[in-house]
Image 1 (tube, rainbow, N blue to C red):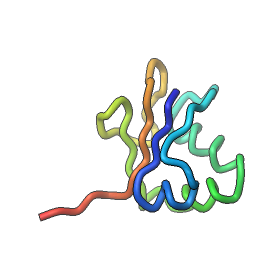
Image 2: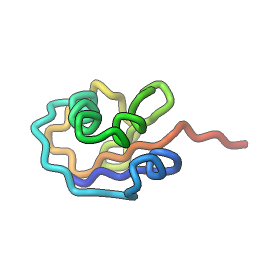
Image 3: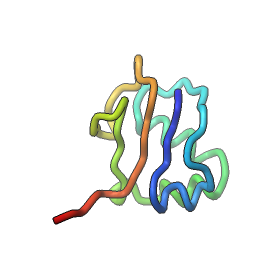
Length: 81
C-alpha cells in the first residue's frame, strides 16, 4: 500500500510517500511496524494524539482495519478559520 506523510510527519521521516508491504490488520498495527523500523519513524509516531489518519482519502481512526485499503495518509490535525 502507499503511505503518505504530510507536514511535520514528512519532515521527521524525510519522505513524502513510500510503498509499504505490511501484514498489519489495523492502522495501529501499521504504526507499530513503522515505529520499529528506525528512530525517525519512532519520533514521527511518538504521540498519536497529535496525528490524524486517512484511509483512501477518508478520515479514519487508528483502530480501523486495513483490509482492502490502498492508501494511508498521516498528518497533523488541521486548523482553519
